Length: 307
Image (cartoon, rainbow, N blue to C red; front, side, top):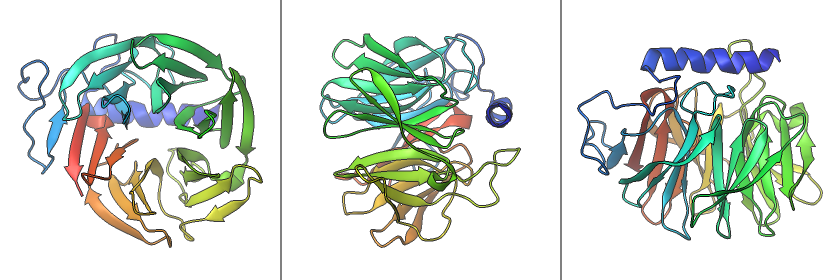
């Protein structure tokens, strides 16, 4: 319970600093609003950015099957059951299509799709959404969940969900949830990515009272059958959040607290590619364009950068 409170305090601080709303209306941009459906000019070398209709964005996901970009908007506090959360739908070039495409969520975070279903982690529920219609098709409540965060999908349709506060990873299959791995050894997991017979995990590290860490997390893999842990970054790496393949055997990773976007090579070497600000959350990455799409939570903004 104390750790959930710590998360609440951290995000409340960020929201207060940025002017993020805690009501049932989407955030409005701080600069002059752009015409509906357009992205806004940028002053930070971003290729495009969107602020209209974006409110405390936590996760960005590029659905390659449909070609759309989806954004989870907390629109409030990250562990509050307020019904204010929603998912936005953007075009591939960053134009807003529908700001409130799916509504009535609480604090939606990680996104990932499998065969036409977009999966979302929302507090203690895993929510299935039909990509074609935008209708919620399933809600799987996970008893004992404290802070569901990121989502990954396996080749067989299994959904994997991280619980950062509980240091746990769940599986969801055929409407039923089970614990896949738990304990300090999995380093309070945040970002997840399934690759073949293993799941790549971005650890946050054990949180202190203010959610900082004495020892941050590492990048590692767990065998899907044996659950054997193999380190990718041998040393503590950061308070890692978003995790995507770089298309070259390595990974693009965001560090929420440090505001960094890094590339981790297959041999575990980490190189900082972009320095942003605190609040750099669950990214998307398009390898063919070397384009990272970043939710900037404290700025109520989505921005795309070339790496």
